[in-house]
Image (cartoon, rainbow, N blue to C red; front, side, top):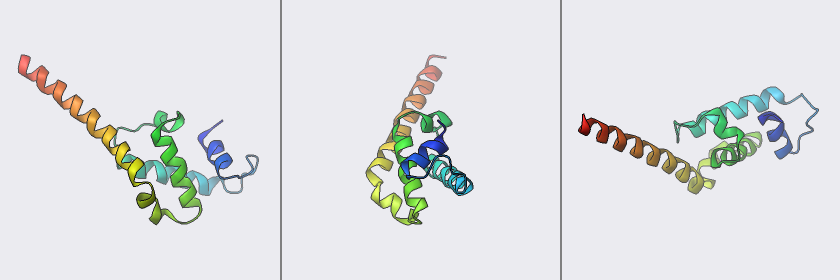
Length: 105
């Protein structure tokens, strides 16, 4: 199954119906972009596997499909913060390793 198929299933849209595919693809793209603004290290793979990013993307799609994206950040702030913290920890580790490597040169 594709991400689009999974979103359709989650939204209770007939997977054989293609009438809303364009709208859903736009929603998915916007959701990925929005979530990547909190964690720039996210890749397509993060949205394919069962991860926090995928859970948030599905939630974003539900809100966007219902024309309620303005409430998404507030309602999901704890999970968004955790997504952001994943990025911060990864970046901290990367910078620490880089600094350690520079110190040994």
